[in-house]
Image 1: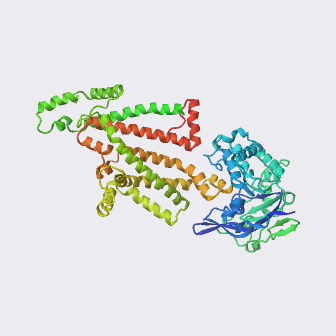
Image 2: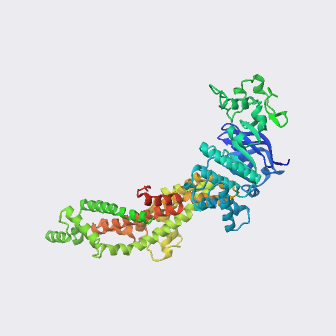
Image 3: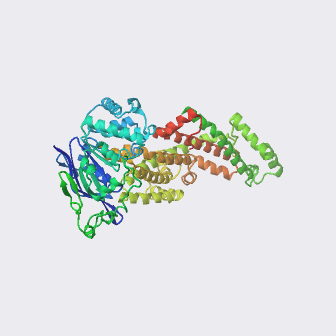
Amino acid sequence: MEKLIEVKDLRIEFASGKKIVKAVNGVSFSLEKGKTIGLVGETGAGKTTTALGIMNLVPAPAGRIRGGEVLFKGEDLLTKTQQEMRQTRGNRISMIFQDPMTSLNPVFTVGDQIAEGLHLHTKLSALEATVKAQDMMERVGIPAARYNEYPHQFSGGMKQRVIIAIALACSPELLIADEPTTALDVTIQAQVLDMMRNIRNKLNTSMIMITHDLGVVKEICDQVAVMYAGQIIESGSLKQIYKNPQHPYTEGLFKSLPKINENTERLIPIKGIMPDPTNLPEGCSFASRCPIADKSCVNIRQLSKEIEKGHFIRCMKRS
Amino acid sequence: MLKYILKRLVMMIPVLIGVSFVVFTMMYFTPGDPARIILGESAKEHEVEAFRDELGLNDPFLLQYGNYLKNLTLKGDLGTSYSTGKPVTEEIVNRFPTTMLLAAMSILLAALIGIPVGIIAATKQYSVFDNVGTILSLVGVSMPNFWQGLVLIIIFSVMLGWLPASGFYGPLYWILPAITVGTSSAATIMRMTRSSMLEVIRQDYIRTARAKGQSEKKVIMKHALSNALIPVITVVGLSLGILLGGAVLTESVFSIPGLGKLMIDSIKQKNYPMVQGGVLFIAIIFCFINLAVDLLYAFVDPRIKSQYKSMRKTGKRAVKM
């Protein structure tokens, strides 16, 4: 299968005063056309920064991409100018942002905000763009009659649908969804997720799903990559990760979830907190919280190793 | 919307009555006798007394105020100026166009400089342009008007001889006063635009616009500016309201026959009806500018528009401006 996007050794840093925050430290993954990868990890693991890196939208001047490649159909997006990137953004690669309440411009109608991308990337006339935008609204479950309403007239779930319509307006080949359901009520979460899955299947869009919700991943993803302190510490197919998690951090994540078919008295949390990203350890960044780590883990750089076909982990104890 | 406007107009009435009462009281209790000032030092005491009676100045305070209010509300009569004998309304109407012209030009100049400089300073935060702009705006705000007017006269009228130093007869005469009055407004508008833009360009919806592939110019001018303008409109409106009350010091420096100069002269002469009428007029102008600004919000921000509309449905006052 053809690889749609291949991220190789992506490194992103932020300058924070005199300190340097290493947000993304050598992330590599690839995605085939029509597939969905789940990028999982706790807050601060570098998921969103990775996504912004792919879009080449890392907020300057504080943030900088320090190295790596983002190959989209063989072309390195990181070597493109901002001008060239604008042809890709919103057109071939789109992004859905986490907080629907703040991601829409309050002074423009939702219809105009959906049609804006069409004006930028297609040669449609104003009328055709309006019709297409209304069609997009119907597809995400908003009546087209609400075209001329403003974001403040929509509920959170409806706003997120608008944002999804904006992202999908130009039928992108890759959709990056950054915690699209986190800010929504649980009932609305299921609806939105269902809708996203349907549209993805219809349009054959590839997707990078960023979330910290393992339930969402199970619903919608084919592949999973678990991130910790700016690195992917375990990746593989959905089945490999869910049935056979190998990295102690991934194991910890699953142990901290309640299971419906087991009578669990107490959940087992992962002890401690993520290391300070301005001062990451030389060796394994999870060593200080890891139940199986020893002295050698702290000092030796952990390399990604394939333990079964397509299943990679960064842990010298388990590989 | 119409109901909202009507409501606001009705609410102006108590405000204006309050203003008239405060001014009337202040003038009543200030020392000095207008009859004596008008008749001059050589007039006899009984002549002055008779004149005081004629002007109604010997009536009790409340009766005087009652008469004033009666004439005002029933006849729309602000009284006659002690010094010229002409109706106060006429005097104000004669002077106001000059003040209005000066105010309009100053605010136009201020907005044309302040808004673009503010936008550029915000998009290039901490750059040389931003730092220089911020320092200049600080200078602009803190420089006293009359001093700036004098300096401009020395440079452009005395030394270079390019522009006239006093009077208000044609476009050439307008330039120096407009710059003098506009400078501090330009500085305030620039600072407000800059801080408002800085806040807006960090919002998530600006990132959304960039993620759509929108050009940086459009992101700033369309997505950011339309949101950042709301506080700027407030500042422009308030500045305009203040300027329409007459730029007292600048009008004195450039000998411009505007409302500000009229007020200062009238206060010196104990010209009670003129001062009272003038202050009331300025208050009315200020109220209307305020209303205009509030209505302008509705056109810039749809959220405010729907608040105005929803008040009509519920009949409650949902926004307090």
